[in-house]
Amino acid sequence: MAVMKFTKKSYTELVKIVGRDRVSIEKEDLACYAFDAKEKADLPSAVVMPESAGEVAQILKLANEQEFYVIPRGAGTGLTGGAAPVMGGLVMAMAKFNRILEIDTDNLIAVVEPGVITGNFHREVEKVGLFYPPDPASSDFSTLGGNLAECAGGPRAVKYGVTRDYVLGLEAVLPTGEIIKTGVRTAKGVAGYDLTRLLVGSEGTLGVFTKATLKLLPLPEGQATMSAVFSSIDHAAESVSAIIRNNIIPRTIEFLDNASIRCAASCRDIGVPLDADAMLIIDVDGKGTVAETEIARIVEILQDNHVTDIRTAKTREEADELWAARKLISPGLHRFGPNKLNEDIVVPRSKIPDMIRRVQEISQKINIPIICFGHAGDGNIHVNIMYDKKDKQLIEKTEKAIEEIFEFTIHLGGTITGEHGVGTTKSSYLSMEIGAMELGLMKKIKHLFDPKGILNPGKIFV
Ligand SMILES: Cc1cc2nc3c(=O)[nH]c(=O)nc-3n(C[C@H](O)[C@H](O)[C@H](O)COP(=O)(O)OP(=O)(O)OC[C@H]3O[C@@H](n4cnc5c(N)ncnc54)[C@H](O)[C@@H]3O)c2cc1C
Image 1 (cartoon, rainbow, N blue to C red):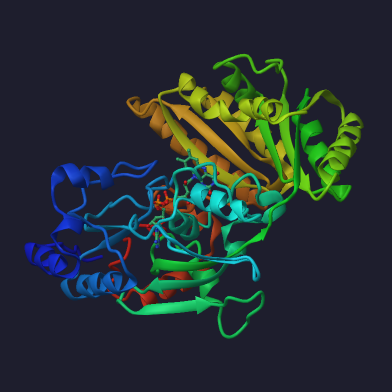
Image 2: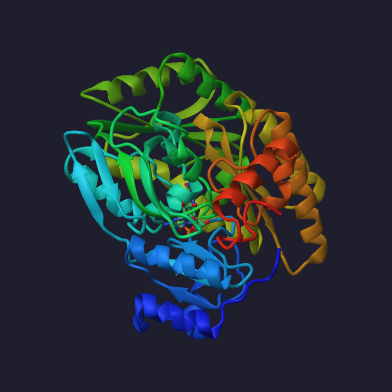
């Protein structure tokens, strides 16, 4: 790929489009955009904050003419380097697109700008009795645009699906500067190819979102929480299958392996024995008394499946205490190693025990702590390899471990990423899962959208 440069002339032209206040080439400003939550990259050459689709279009046209890279950015919470400027260029920060334009309670849709913080959107729709289910754990600081670009998931995906299931239509600016509108405002719509679905999850490589029409649901009336402890990961996995076989789809089913339980307990007492092999935290929701009825039925199912301890929450505070075990894992992780590689593999639900056992074997073989937790309901396991990046030998070992984990994931019929995307960190592993023909097709699509390769270079493909 030819090296592209943002020049003094590019800066002058950019100032003509957005004015001097919304573009910067000052090092102290650029330092704030040289990374995401995963990757520390090089300083970009400049950062710009457009306010309208028209400005985004003019900037991308300029980038094509003058041949410089543009990297779209939401809140920078991505975990695969998606918003990190790995080849220099102009960071396009979408923070000014922060308005919820419409909440339509008759048609259960909302129209939003991409810079809206996801948690703020949750709270606004809930005020009028509506519900936007996608709930990445980062929702208090990530943006809807970043969620769309990564097709973010979260604990509620087991019952409600992921971001792509809630995007009806988009306004986006193509890398060549044209503004396009995709999708519908209606519950149905099959006119032509589904460009909306192609753009969602495209990791900022096919277009810059400037508006989105999102589907909403009625807010569930009631919610209930419980936790369950097991002496074997097989019993926990079998319990998850049994719950779903009994026609109950919980709002969330989170699981912790033994290493995660010890990790959370290293922060404070969580009331779970340290030799427990697995723990589930389950939320259910529904109309009227549905939540209570489902929890009672789940307790019966777990009792038939070798559970060793069950707790049900009677108040919101008690529910928060049950969730504390899950929430303490992240703060506890760094006690097991200064650096972390966090993979988000997915395997068929029933294969979780096989996967965890294989990860435990790999952890013992290379003598590095690997801590697994995640969304048991949809088979999404967060595999955290804790290591010290100053130790070269450890880096080699962790790279080998990741490769083995991905190989086994694919062998079990899974995928190397359920919600964090490919970005830079998984690009060299993509061909383990996607065939040469399909990868070739994806690259042709990228070329069709972005013939000069100016938008978010170095992402997804090696
Ligand atoms: C503590 C923590 C917990 C997390 N938990 C979860 C979780 O539970 N589930 C989950 O899925 N993820 C999770 N993540 C990852 C991350 O929060 C998500 O990927 C999120 O969607 C990124 O949003 P962002 O606004 O920070 O985007 P950024 O990191 O800024 O960007 C992510 C990608 O989106 C592109 N992009 C941003 N805005 C636009 C736009 N307007 N148009 C086109 N492309 C755009 C960027 O170029 C980049 O490729 C977590 C991260 C952290 C740090």
